[in-house]
Length: 314
Image (cartoon, rainbow, N blue to C red; front, side, top):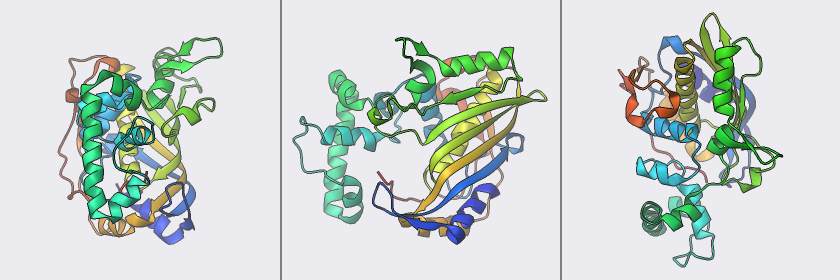
């Protein structure tokens, strides 16, 4: 994963200090590209442990077109909890302790952090046990899965972008239109978080499938390792569906940043020596990308350095 470590060094040496939506502050560069040959191993971070199971469950959530955190919570995946939780505590139905600016306060105040954890646990329990509550506060709006699988048209219909692009790869592999976009300007304001990974394009050459992702905003320490592994996995799954080998994953980023409260963690990671990449394994008995479960996708030979914790900027 030298490509990723080089990016971290590049931002530390060249990043501009910028303010951001979360109030945390960043070091940022604009426009960066990394390339990963997927035949060299699966690009899962080895300089810190990265939760592959969470990557798999989130990607399958996108692929199924789901937008409600309930399915993720059922898989013990809490990637999207904070954004759904914010919808609840900002509603008229919420009658608990004041949770304003909960992300920053939980980091700075141990007493508040305990209260926050209690309220978050209550929220998670209600999402899993109360259908009406889950429908109202678990749904994140028309985020990735909605746009990938049922993009709304002006005529009242929907477009299944992912299914269409898979069929196009099979029938017209040399097309330059193998694109899926998550950025739908009409509905951006209805999303709990506008899509960071906005558009991806597939490319077929020499019997191999490559994928390029454009990501408008890239949280390099916490988010980007997940994004790399997620789209590398997506490339493998689509290639398998289309009877192709894998080529490259190309990761192009816009505002590419390190949060200022992640800089010590980045330095710790840069001091570590990368280890061999793992190998991806997919259950051969499940033929369709749309039928896969979390248990069907694993990695072998993954021996990373320990996890490095860092706060999420919400």
